[in-house]
Image 1 (spheres, rainbow, N blue to C red):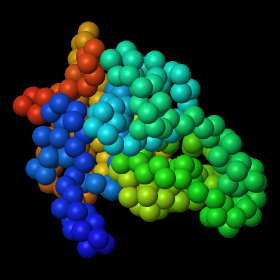
Image 2 (cartoon, rainbow, N blue to C red):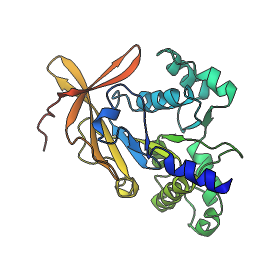
Image 3 (tube, rainbow, N blue to C red):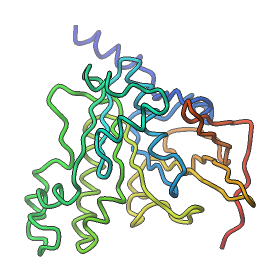
Length: 260
């Protein structure tokens, strides 16, 4: 029986299909390599949270399990925001396929480090405390963290704590075997894609979402800036956020405005 399980694992598709229209086509393999940790970077109003929630919804409707960790919005607000697009999050929360956790970043840092602005002597102890809690027997296909920016805002007086937490978080994702998406807030046309730069180094992938001003209108776009273990398009593509959610247009290339 063990051999059969191993054979099944080998036959498993090596990529995770997001099922966001047009997005998976940006990859020669047809999706994001499984187990990758991916930064979803962009400014306000670019659709970062919607993008991640849409992936979760698409997967839970296929019988997969997803975990969405919010450091900012309440569970009720997340449910409501998904309902706007016709995604019945509550149905899948109740069925046990979608786990939504609201965590205060200050609490998690206090739990791990004793205090947010302490001497750092609690660092060794913090290694024994997992950076996120996954219920027993819940094996998520995808884990979303919304957002890393909220964690660094909470730990701004103690950047060392944030760095330790970050390294543990990426190690934790690797151990779970989940594909993870970590949201980070940037400038509208970013030249850096995370709060400290460590995130970019640790992540397997970086997706950048843009909200570009063109005269009196705005244009949404997406770019796969980096994705280990994949052959992906290296251009910026048009993205639309409609009443049905996000749609990517691989046939429509977008030029970014010049910036210094």
